[in-house]
Image 1 (cartoon, rainbow, N blue to C red):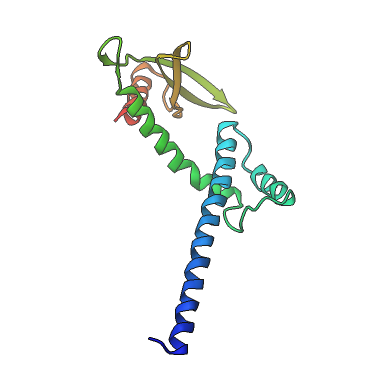
Image 2 (image 1 turned 90 degrees about the vertical axis):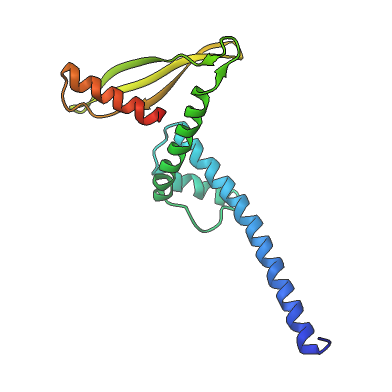
Length: 168
């Protein structure tokens, strides 16, 4: 345990662990930067193709953005986990008991058809009391399924399926 070789190996191992810890910290910081930018893109409905250009601009301004997750594919792959997390938070929010009524929040469905390039979809939203910060109501888009049949029963079934998928 006192040999020179052993001491050199211990020092080498300690250096590697320190470098590994530094890299892990750097990766977390870079992940936060890229994740925040991705959220900014989702929230503001920006085209995914601009993501790479934004990252190039950040890099030119000497902001460390690492070497991975720089393509539009990263945004597309991140969208599903973000959507699932938002659904989970929405369910939790809607299941909270309102202190003024001692019951779960009442909800109202808001429905509207939209057509874009001959494709009709059913916008499905939920509206519920907010009671925070002077805001009386808040609305959440819970789905936008394609309308296959415009008749009453299939359309109603589509709305029920969309809402159940969100709330279950």
